[in-house]
Image 1 (cartoon, one colour):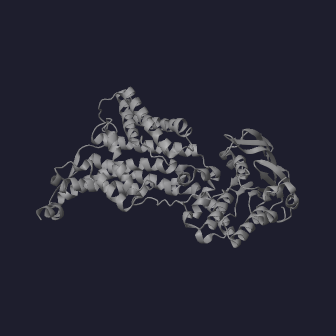
Image 2 (image 1 turned 45 degrees about the horizontal axis):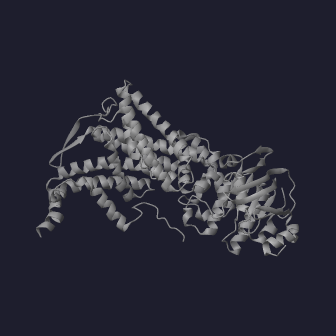
Image 3 (image 1 turned 120 degrees about the horizontal axis):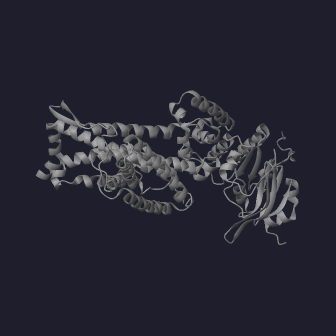
Amino acid sequence: MHFLYLVFIDPFVQMGMAPDLLAQTLWEGLVSGVLYALIALGFVLIYKASGVFNFAQGIMVVFAALTLVGLYAAGVPALLALALTVAVMFVLAVAIERLVLRPLVNRPDIILFMATFGLTYVLVGMGELVFGGDTKQMIAKQLYLPSGAIDLAMLGGRVTLQKLDIAAAIIASVMVAALAVVFQYTRIGRALRAVADSHRAALSVGISLNQIWVIVWFAAGIVALATGIMWGARSEVSFALEVVALKALPVLILGGFTSIPGAIVGGLIVGLSEKLFELYWGPLMGGGTEAWFAYVVALIVLLFRPHGLFGEVIIERI
Amino acid sequence: MTEAAGHVAAGETLLAGERISLRFGGVTALNDVSFDIRRGEIRAIIGPNGAGKTSMLNVINGFYHPQRGAIRFHGENLARMNPGFAARSGIARTFQNVALFRGMTTLDNLMAGRALKMKRGLFWQLLRHGPALDEEIAHRRVVEDIIDFLEIEAIRRVPVGRLPYGLQKRVELGRALAMEPELLLLDEPMTGMNLEEKEDMCRFILEVNSQFGTTIALIEHDMGVVMDLSSRVVVLDYGRKIADDVPDAVKQDPAVIAAYLGVAG
């Protein structure tokens, strides 16, 4: 009886008693949720356009952040280093299209998936070779990202908003919105969706698969760079960042692999629910729930909606 | 302008395949096949299953690259086509088992057919303003005309994956027409259709040919349709060309009758 009380009643009583703490938690959940959504978007873009689950997306985040920090350490001014990193991500997209995708066109998806594994190790190796394996600080200040915090007196207490988090939420939201608009309303977006639906039909109307793939991988590279800067600034730049990208997996399962709105909603659900669960239910099981709670949510969704909340239901003719 | 069933088409050669051989490993799909398509005609390709008809269309628009032979298009010799070049030079096609953009609406499918004709950059597109908007409107008008022509107004906003098969075939024809092609390749445009749908499709094909002067090459199994529509027929069997003539002559050809009925030589 007491246990049921702890699970079903006490957390809500606590929420009511200290609304400022609840607001603080919701805010933090929202920020990480937006960032999760951004990472998941990188996956969705590539999955939609080439049917490949890009295992290398996580390492692309690390690689982009390392390149940026490494260039700055080599004496390049911060903003120029940012521009150069964007250029590097473009070159990377072209190289991946030429060396990996083009030779493997029309092969089974699993082969392309394995190729992204290979890509992961190439990027890890290159990153360590060029920039070293040690942990680095993100050059947040030099990129004019704000630091410090705003204290709001509200709800009978205080809610602290890190300025960096505010900036991250805004930048991520703008990028997510921009990608959604491009995908839905422009000719290039229409071509992207066309390629996602049928390669040979897209070819037959004169859409160039090679060009679309470069665009998509470049966009995923930019998304990776933004994610790398934000997560890097909140913690540090190291290969451990790759693990953060793994969080995109439950987000994708929640939202469906093919849906941009799904990635956004999924990201927010994961971010909010894991923070709330950690604070109010975590103590019941000794804390540390943030590492696994998202996967439990994903599992529950899989039981009831195997295609995710927004994914396409794939009907195959037998 | 050729009259609808006015069999013999005048006009110079638009596209010709010369001594084309195509192999997949040990299987010979096309064996030393030569054929031509003349400007303004409706050219039919027939033959039993596995005769190499679809392979021939795939060679024409560059999905397959033949090991030997060449394609002459607009008087230019090409060792091989590629799909991008084919689309840019005015060759559009439909597929045997329908290849549409299933998640997109009828309207978006047809607009995708305009991909090559739209030039404005991403910046203007994002603003949805100025030249890009004018461009979108101009292309939309063309697409709306095609929608009217094919009588698919009612399904403009429906994702095509939800449409019945016959309508999907019609949308696919619409997407090909949206490219304003010079040469239209139709791979079995009437399979899986009932009589009424077939009659509609026949009417559309004839009108496209007579109104827009589009040259058409089509693969079809329904002999009645082939004989009514086409000006000339090429017959394939086991990757070889066994006949190439006007429909009435092909009908009488002993080799064709043997291939279809399996009469011993």
